[in-house]
Image (cartoon, rainbow over all chains, first blue to last red; front, side, top):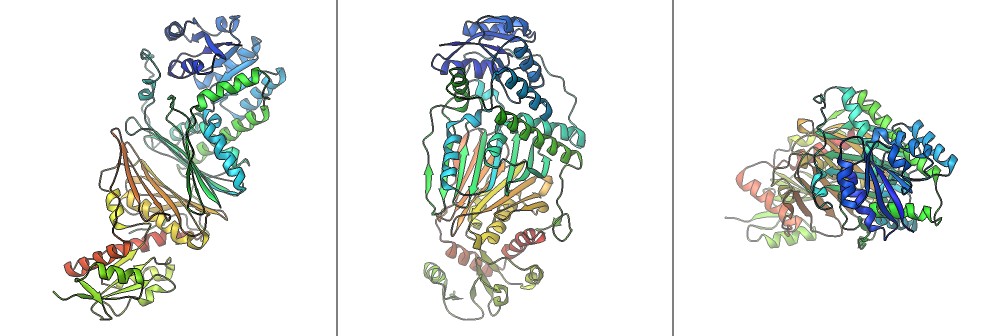
Length: 363
Length: 245
């Protein structure tokens, strides 16, 4: 069976990612409807894929050919659009990350989906990458306690990657006028860090939760210029360091998750966003010094997340509402904690056993 | 020119002496170079020579950090994870780091020195002295947040695992990245630069660490210049000893 997909949203994440990705699902899905908020870009995307276009969500949600609603609107509207889909009787929803802006809202939203049995997949693509499944299997087989997890992102602008998944670029959207950023303003820094953790860290924090599921303590959080954050967590007796920098130019994007146990160091290097040249690259260095490099799976997380929705629709997999809820709450609690730490003084400094807060060294 | 005598019974350094002949020869003269194994109170053995090589020193106690400044003769410190020729490679191209991360993993017996060397790589990539901002420890890991010149942030994580040896990855994040990979399973370190033109890997350094140290200390003696190895060691040790884990 082929399910018709209606996508709410008409940005690059639709034109360069989800719309073409549907073609990778062996006929499970086809794009039938795209809606925008008035930009006119939905019509351009729809024309490329032989779909219908509309403005607003009502027409799309009333379209009888829409079996699956894909919510790819701006993050602040995800909750509203999930609820609109539920209210329209839709029971198969793909929602781009983040699901909601607050932990309470995420909790309520998942509960509302569960109450009506709606199928819901959140586009945390790294969690779906076959390499991550392989890495976690490897770690399980080692039966070793997790000592540390480190996540390092150094990202270049996405538009260089859009070019390899679109025949023609989309016309630029209306310019967004933002006031100049005052990096010395703790409130502004805190808001940016929160947004980055909730919107970017959400790619990998569910992976962290996969390994160290306890509610984490924040060790520190600080902003990184020009746009980024650096934070550390303590959970399940392990330490987690998460660093991200977004740059206006530069090298190919680096996106790496490393996991250390007593017996091995596993490194998972994800491909840049948007591209489809296979999943992540996984290497393992064990205690004997043996390096194992796994083959790169042809499928990536973007493709597999849609296949996961197809499996739910076919009844081949069960909805795990509690996992969805726990992932969202985990991420948003860290986002809130990081923002609070930044607001309190950019870096929450831990006192050492001797009571000193900072050491000047290296002179 | 007379050969400088080198006092050592460590086979790798005796080989280095052979590899640098005729500039050096084995001997016990106080005008020569003494190789000191870095076990125990190694700093007490920095006597009776005109220059020293300290091989893989154990971390310095806080009480000793200040005493080392008064030695006044060239001292080359051999830290195989932190070779001077490799860090020259890593700083050969300008990188404007926005943040620096160092991840290290190694056995428990070497854990303190591994963390010290991870801090050393952070210092090298930052291009100057560091201040410790925070630290957290668990039974099997330590993570530290630091600040470098111009306010650049650094994050260093050391996890316990494996048997002997270990691995270290140091990355300066920016429009141009530099990444250093050191692993005890190979004597060859990897230094790679990434920018918009792609990845360039520096040629590997194939001189033995012992010959490199002996050559550096000879050059310092002959030219009358100082080596900063001991001060850098003390700085890195100070960073990890301020908040003892």
